[in-house]
Image (tube, rainbow, N blue to C red; front, top):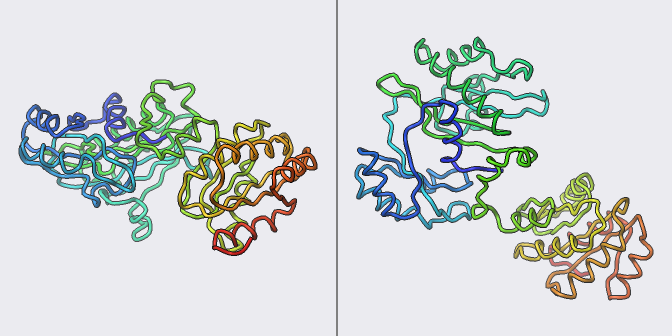
Amino acid sequence: MNIHEYQAKEILRREGVPIPPGEIATTPAQAEQIARRLGGMVVVKAQVHAGGRGKAGGVKLAKTPAEAAEVAGKILGMQIKGLTVQKVLVTAAADIASEAYVGVIIDRASKRAVFMVSPDGGIDIEEVAAKTPDRIMRLPVDPRYGLLPFQAMQMGFFLYRDVANARAAARIMQQLYHAFLHSGASLAEINPLVTTPAGEVIAVDAKMVIDDNELDRRPDIAALRDESAEDTSELHARRANLTFIKLDGNVGCIVNGAGLAMATMDLVKFYGGEPANFLDIGGSSNPEKVVNALRIITSDPGVKAILFNIFGGITRTDDVANGIVTATRHNPLTVPLVIRLTGTNEDLALAILAEHGFSATRDMDDAVQRVVALAKGGAK
């Protein structure tokens, strides 16, 4: 689960991370009022779950309250990577002498949290890694002991030569790690971590991604979810207890089981197609899941053909067949459908489909080749 910058900053602030004051505004008038309270120059920042806000014009400096209102009026309502800006963070501007990057992420290979720090902040860490990998220090954290003081100082001195700055950065990294643990995050980063001409070290931006598996036991963090900032199809899928990720292709995939779903996507690519999504209806025998899955897939105008790929183990293929019949009866398809069913009750499933005018195959390669051809405009 993504959370907004202002929410991530509040989590870090509770741990003691020094962060310039700021408030949320949903109208230009509110932005002006906040700027008056803060005094001096402010930065108006779009709050959307998308990177590249600055390049898109979603981050602007305002020298006066009136200018803050003007800038907020331009940012509110704008589209950034398909998401509408509904709120902005108005925060006190900081004098910046230098910028660094500090982040901690779950590394599945080492099965532990790993810090990544770089004296080159303010740009994507991926760009630093690609062009100047020697400018990144990586430090795995032993979960038994946490981030030890000497480790934090090692990273602090990697960022700064000045002892006071290194100590301040080390303290912030300890606080960032505590926030990372206490919120159930899979990613927490400060970019940039800045020094001011007065020698302060402060966080002027923050990003956190929360592990979905943590949300049931952290209701306070789960309450931070902003559904208005999420893709509509992914929102509907979560409410229907479906695992769904939207992609950029044109072959809609409805599959049972994550492993089979990944194999299906690989095979679509192998035969020259592009999957439009990852959608796993799971192992339960519930026709309603099929109905919801088809509704989500058909709402995507980019989908040109749909593939059902069902291997019935726990999942009964006759339930899937009934779900297909029910879904298409209420919402007739406007794109071709290819069905592959095999496993539990497959003979019954094929009979149900045939009775309602659907054909199906037991062969996965055949089904994928057919759906890829249909998505490209080929014959049935």
